[in-house]
Image 1 (tube, one colour):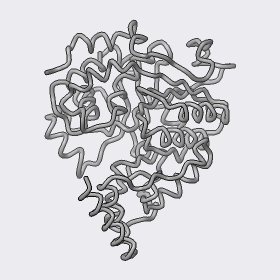
Image 2 (cartoon, helix red, strand yellow):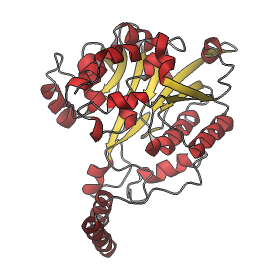
Image 3 (cartoon, helix red, strand yellow):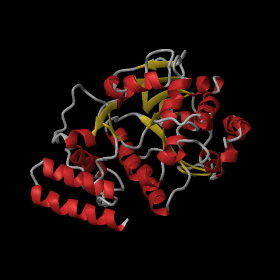
Image 4 (cartoon, rainbow, N blue to C red):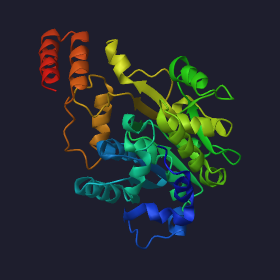
Length: 352
């Protein structure tokens, strides 16, 4: 059974966008208007958006702190889109905006959308934040003409001035090529893309007006409803935006696949070229205690600049995480500790 495509049209109708935001909370939201969000004392304000689920609020909050830290003098409005926000995360986000005097607008989406997304062939394989990404530009109609979308598992380590100067007047989005040797080569063929290019959707600078004019949201949701896509919305967006994307330098979305690096015994933070955004792709994240890469130390440094500074790193909990941790320990010469961890993995697997 496929979701009713007329529903996608309603979701895309910005006049009815409020139907799908049950509440917005945060920085003076009851009194802010569009002009206040875009200009203040002739300052240029940059809009940055995230789509997250419960597991990624910490990563997103530290990401926001890293953006502010590395871009002194720039004014931002941060938009957080989620289906729910715990009291704890809400309080920490409010503390973050007070800490840096930067607006953070929290958009809590109506759970009705889950009924539609649950019918997508690839729904069970991906986090909810993945599907929220497609909705964001339509929700920001009338608020801003440009928005920078950033995944929560990203850290900013450089200035963003020139990214915001990217000319996307005649495009829908600017994005970075995905790994040609792996993801891009397989997906260009699998998706039968007309132009042999494929982008990673973890960082996208979006022309909101062009996105809406092309009906990108409806096209992408329709594609998701009809095909079992390996990379869900990223695949759908590559299909829809194949000829409407401008490609930008890799430094704006420099990917580090930590599980691959750690499996090879590589732990140093060595970048092949300068980066402004480092994107930690894959199952291993720098906020996990069992991440034995230098990326963890970098994350802890930025976490210290946020209201999440007192939150301990996530320990391994699933059998998969225990297995990976034992593998990493043994690879780095911690044999006995690795063996003990592997025994925990075997016991956990037998109990499940």
